Length: 179
Image 1 (cartoon, one colour):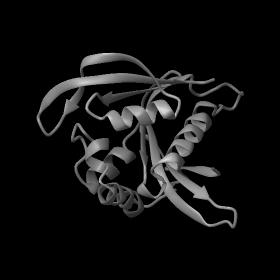
Image 2 (cartoon, rainbow, N blue to C red):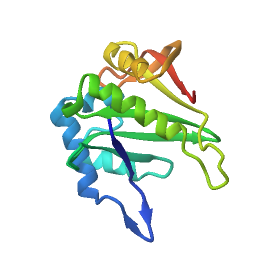
Image 3 (cartoon, rainbow, N blue to C red):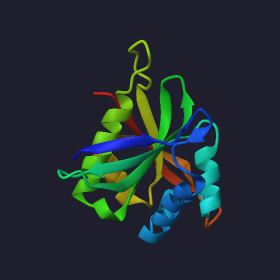
């Protein structure tokens, strides 16, 4: 699968995507029925909250775009990194419904490969590892993370916050390593 990762960033005061375009990504998640699963903790509940999160310092959003053999492009998902510390970051995925299934796994693997192999100016890798915490109740997301190259490291008894129930729940800690 030929993909492009288009960063949401600001260059010379101009953002690569408008706020309304970023809000439309959340609309897409809601339409697909994935917003509540992605934001299980209810930290984001609407499009303005999503825009605020993606604009917040330390959050690095990439829009994943696929290009077919005749040059037609389509948005197929998003990924963002946050809680960056040294060469570590938390990674969050959301494939869109137009690639659910086998294509979303291809997209996920390629996205992880590209992000973990990004280099800085002197040729040093920017990241050595990505982490994620997934609620145990979301078996589909755990299976997807593993299919994309993630490895479940451990179970965390109170690792996930259920925003609807306002209670801690078990979660699994997942890591993605280069190589």
